[in-house]
Image 1 (cartoon, rainbow, N blue to C red):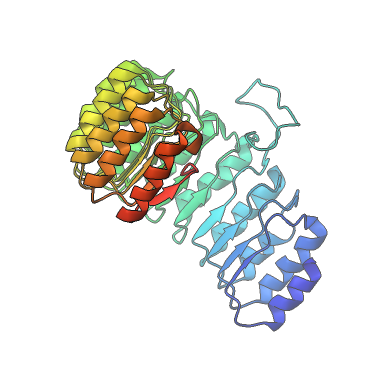
Image 2 (cartoon, rainbow, N blue to C red):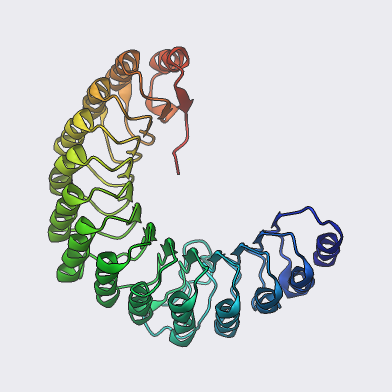
Length: 411
């Protein structure tokens, strides 16, 4: 397959995008493609993720010789330390690539920052280790590249030292707009580095630190400084904190940041172990914030008081467009509370209520809300949570109002 695709690349001169992900190409299949890309002058986007390459497969030469490629996806290929170093070195000399995805690439095998054993049977959520030497090569890329706009190093177990160095590199980088360092065993040093970056970097638009479970909740002093910096940052538009646990003091600091920040448009707080008091602290900030357009609180266990506080915030917020409340343990009465808030809200266009207990009263409240609300365009809800009589009526009201009725979660 690799040879046939390589021949196609060399003879068909109109192709600009090619995705050969998840084809089990292996090294033998990837090498002909890498060689062809050295000579190809039309392709701008190339994805070869999840192909069990286990090494660079000649793609370092591609980065050195190709002059048209803009985006390259190498994720989930288990490349290893040596391959990572070669690719990073080649990228330093490349002047055209603007985005590279190196997620979950098993770039190192020294578990310096973790004493956990890796279960080889788990292949979806494992964060592979990245050696410090290889990690520092990518720090150099971040420091020196003047063309790269997007860098994904997620799920590589970078560790705190490399995480800190990457954050420091953001202080001098003037081009990167998207950085994903999620699921990398980051801790206190990385948090301190990132707070400095948030204060000084003026180009970063999207930051993903999701999956670094205890990065914030075990480093209170550092996390408070991080959120203080977020409060004064006026360039970051998107922050992903999914599965980055939040507790007590840092929740208060986050609420303060959301009241002060006027730029952030999207924040993901899903599965951050938020509890009742946390939401009671955050909800007023959600209500008064005039920049956020997207908010996810998915997979947090809330209760009546916290849902009531969210409903109050929803009733007065004038900027939020998307709200994900999937699987937050809402019961029928709490669903009624949210539905009543929807009657007052005039800006929300999409809400996810899947995996929550709607029940007859909640369903009827939603039906009544949709008859009044003229802004909502998309409703996500789990059918089994609604008796058939109410489900059919809800579907009919959605049809009449031009609201998309979806039975699956946004994620």
